[in-house]
Structure formats: structure tokens, C-alpha cells
Image (cartoon, rainbow, N blue to C red; front, side, top):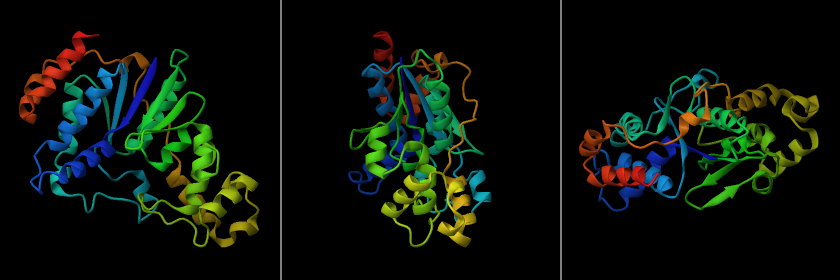
Length: 274
């Protein structure tokens, strides 16, 4: 089986701002939610059988207590923020496994789900659908990262080509170069090429000779902690829990509330073909 893990927060942002190009600033109350649901249904129509969606139920996580500049929900447009929780409710009603994260982030849920799924010998491949750089650390023998907009599939070789380091060393690499999307700057004076060269020469930051980073070592190790995804979230006991078996009875009212009758028809049709 192939397991598909979707970054629901990214998809919500993608659809919200994608629709902005056409709606002249008149955001539909559930426009982005409907867009995400149709994206998931399209995957199901293309024979995806096992699906899980991770979302940020809140934006802040334990990392905000580690670094004051870490990303927060500040600046998220109210019209977008108002669709976060409805998305979770709608996905569950559509029969999709959804993991709303609070202390951890959606990225941690994706990493945890990938580890759990890859541990099942029945799973041939795990596809993590997100462009986030930190998820590259999860790529392995049976785990790939998929960039939906570019249709790029990153296996271990592609990660090495893109970043210059092995997937295992992505947290070390990001600690040095920083991640503006997550709100930490990296180490001043070290760019992508230099970071890759250092990591390939010395390995993990903990193994760097003291003189390489000097007084910046502790900050680099902190940034590595920010960049390292958690894989210990117990999201499911068995990968069979991710099998899509069709919408629940409540999806009829949810689809009506979303104002898109195609959702119910499309989900029902997909279920009848299983």
C-alpha cells in the first residue's frame, strides 16, 4: 500500500491565496476549505487508499518557548484563520484521518505519521505532500516528499542534490542557514554552500570541532532543536486506520454548509467505486 500524508495547513494557505487571484478580494467563508476537500477527493479518485491530514489547530507550539522569534499566528488574515477549524471538522466528516496539533506542529505530525507508516512492512511507500524544507529530514528508503505545485518528488538522492546534504543532516543544515518561514535566522555568515560543506565534513553539529562555531555553537544547537521534527506523536495504532472508507453521515450537512453540492456527489461516487 501507499500512504499519503498531507500538510493541511499548507493546503489551506495555498487554496486561500490561490483563490484570491480570481475572487477580487471577496473571500468565500469556506472557499479554501472546499478547495482542500476537492484536492483530497482528487487524490482518492486517483486511487489513493490510505490518507492522513495534519493541521495546526493553533499556530504556536512548544518551539515558541525555546526561541522568542519563532513563528506565531500573528498576521494571519481573519478570513483565513476562520477556516482552520472548519477544515478539520470537514475532513473528519468526509472520512479522512485528521490530526489537529496543539503542542506539536503539523510538521511534527507528518514526521510521526511517516515513521509509524514506514515501520509497517506492508507499506510500499509513504508520500509526504508538502514543500516545507524541514520535512526533507524524513525522506528515506520508502519515504518521499512531494511538492504539489511543481510535481517534484524528492527521494534521498534528490534531497542531496537540492540541499547538498543527506536527509538525516537537514536539521544541522537548517540550523546553520536558518528558516525564515519558521522565524529563526541561522548563523550569521554561513550560507547554503558553506553550511553543506561544513555538515558534509564534520557531520552533526554536536561533532563540530569547537573552533568551527566558537561562541555561536549553543545558538546553532538551539536552532537545530527547532529544526528537528518530533516523531513520537502516537497518531494511530495501525496504518489500517488511514484507509478511506467513504464519507460519514454528517458529511451531507457539512457539504451543504460549505455551499458546494459537488463535494457530496464526488465523495459518494468515489466511495461507490471502491
